[in-house]
Amino acid sequence: MTKALPARLPDCFRWVEDDEGRHRLFLESVEVLEVRRQRMGWVVEIHLQQEAAPSHPQIVAVRSPAAGIRWGARWSKMRAPQLSAMVAISRRHAPRPQVGCASESGSYAAMP
Image 1 (cartoon, rainbow, N blue to C red):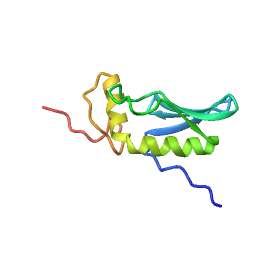
Image 2: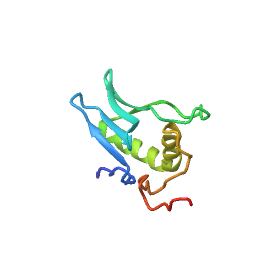
Image 3: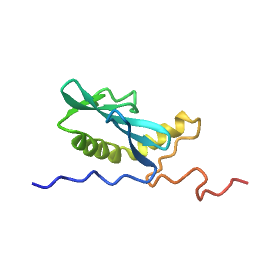
Image 4: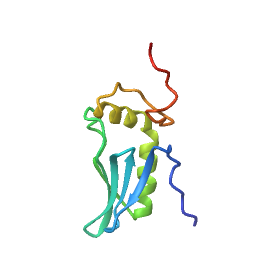
């Protein structure tokens, strides 16, 4: 049985593992979710999500840290434009989905 690899995320996403074994996914400098041990198992806790989407769970149980990373990567990849827009709003910028996650100093022309 082969292990599935995590979904490839845009470069503006990055995983960080801390000393406690938690894996945290950041979009630029904003924490999107974390994979952590809870009691005798593992969970993915989503920190950044739309308030108008109550049907999405905030905590999902997973089998292992690797399964949590795969689940979190797929979840984030499917929502990358919305997550980028929410980060932009939180920084008081106009919301603009950035599928490729171009940096703010990117190739946008200055308005005259």
